[in-house]
Image 1 (cartoon, rainbow, N blue to C red):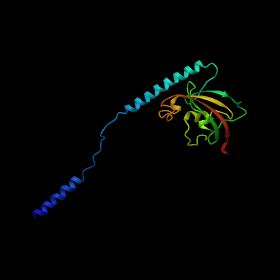
Image 2: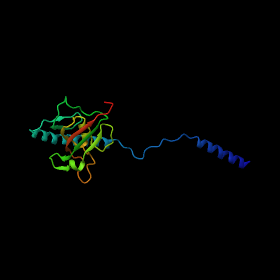
Image 3: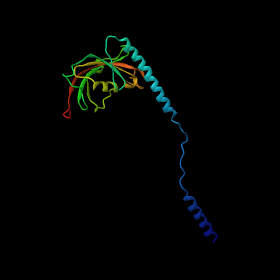
Image 4: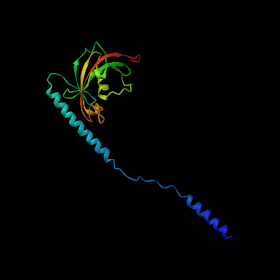
Length: 186
């Protein structure tokens, strides 16, 4: 009888302890989100500093008329086409173009020859192309050459170009739009 009582007490205690509700796991380390807030503030300050440098360049350049894009970069036309002669590329169009990369002072980083002729499907291609140039192409007409002044977040950002351009460096790029092949959708 003692053995039965002993086994019964073990079974009851096992049932009682196994019915316990699960405990919520707590993180070992709690973060307040201050890193993200600090990063946002750093990036805003970086953009404002780069914008001030670009504004000085624009103010000192009396030869060109600059335009500000809605996306946060500036540009001027080296060669401009008449609006009624050619259309701008639209989503899905295939464009061919050449471009170079320079520091804001004009020192070359990557030449047009190094880049070669580029093919790009507007807003549908996974091509490794910085956002400033992708957005700039949509502002151009066939045969135009445009120089874009790009803050680092529209250029190569935090990564730069290996062995050529450091992180967070604003650049300028001269882009020549060679052809626009429109899709059937347009």
